[in-house]
Length: 333
Image: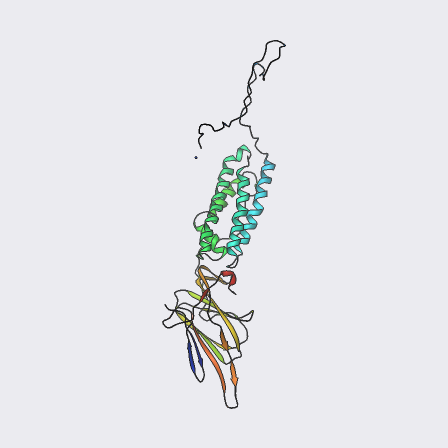
């Protein structure tokens, strides 16, 4: 087995640390109510019920009246709000809480779409209504399917989820069918309030600081990323996030001037860095380095000594510091 390696080197010395049902006989027969009996022709006592001559028996299926235009418009508007709100919130969600947010989005859309599926619109728009609701149902199903990708961390942000369902052909049909229905009576069907972009592969330059406190120290931390994905490394001191830096794949970077203190080291690997969400959008992993790193400067009468560190993010022969896989919500991004 190999593991990441952590190397500490002091100015004076070098230390290596390894980082379908049927009835059976006897079953009760279930059916609609049946009236029976004999009706006398005179004033005798009859048993049962009678039908007036020439009157048809009641139908077993009631007729549902179609809605008025105003009532139908109100139903569309009632569904529109929750759908728009759910999609807008999903679009603004980064890596933290994405799984829960997507579940909430699917639940909100399921309630709204199920309501529209029971609506009987005016006869003039019944076919466009069916098309519109059908596209909404397919979008809801696609979002439900995307939960597997989110849990596997193949998709890591809300915008990336929407990009995926759009590329599978589920958002554009909603907009087209909604526009077609709206044109027939100014109906509120603009239920997708967000702009969905195509898949991207954004990167920062190697060594770009995402966050950094002042660095007046003498020590440095060298970061080596031999992985096939870019990384963002975060150093925390206590509960404070001190430094966050971007290290491209197959690259290294040295952070100079690290303050004295004990640091925990976290890093995330992935594809397509979303600076707004502060997260990779695809193929993301989150890890914590298995050992804290302490920087200390010692002053004596004749010399100043300090410790430098080298941290390798990928597994190396001889490494003994094993990283710990963490949840996205535990990453201090």
